Length: 207
Image 1 (tube, rainbow, N blue to C red):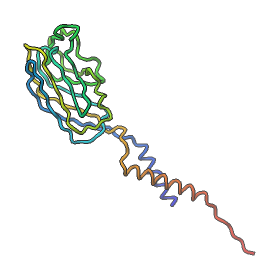
Image 2 (image 1 turned 120 degrees about the vertical axis):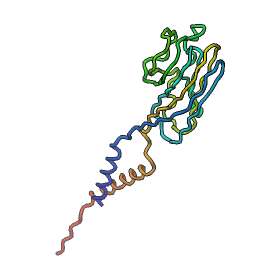
Image 3 (image 1 turned 45 degrees about the vertical axis):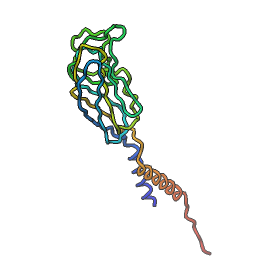
Image 4 (image 1 turned 60 degrees about the vertical axis):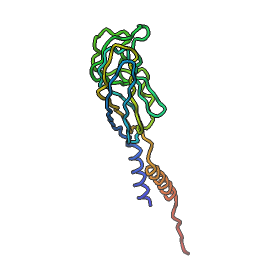
């Protein structure tokens, strides 16, 4: 019994001391045309049911005049605005720069899209979204994720070639029921071992 308790306690200690490993999950979605004064959307249906630690979103997009556009990401009851007509206000028509490439929205990026523009075409890279993507932290990856982009002025059009979701999941996950059972058995075995250690043999002498 003592050997079993020690083995179980050792196994339990190892399980508790080993941190949950984070994993990466990447899902991709299709594109659509972005026409004047129109809204379009694309869905990604994620089957995996994992807990979100962090999330980045990448858009492969071409469109003249960034200030025309609003982009949002939705899942369930949560909606995050990636950008909303940058430069409007203070500029009447917003940032006049163009989009042409892959743009990633990441809470760890240094800056959002500029409100003033002046670059001609915004270089590809990482940008902060208008609303933090951490709004999805702790939620499940499973479900329908919807990217919506609307053009809110005339004279400029474009297209979304595709988009992707990059999830970091698994860190700090809650133990599965089997793990909880192992923990309970381990604590019970430790207690039994401690009680047995306290038992002292009685000595009997005969006259």
